[in-house]
Image 1: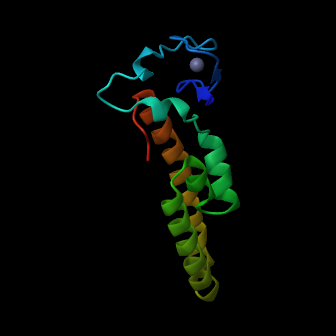
Image 2: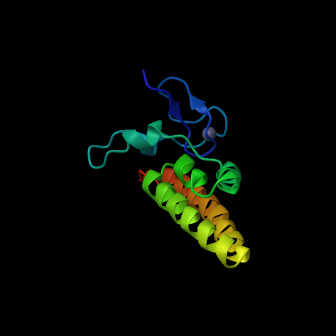
Length: 124
Ligand SMILES: [Zn+2]
């Protein structure tokens, strides 16, 4: 059986319960209602915005990949390489600014991902 997670607090849900044991969040909206496929949401785990930011601090794009946006993460990485090259030849501040923006972007994406989970929407 698949492991399911509470979309609010991220703790594991054991068995077929209507409320989260940890935070009391109402899970009944995540049951199959025949109209929309919410079963996938149920299986997704909440992401940590701080961890997303730290990963993108280590390397731009890593945080985006952690949140689950692989395409965006790879794009951010590719652009980081190009800007790093240009910055080394011209102005290093260019790269610093880009890097900072991507840290914030990963953090924001994780928050967006979490709020979509709470609404019962598959983020990607
Ligand atoms: Zn919970």
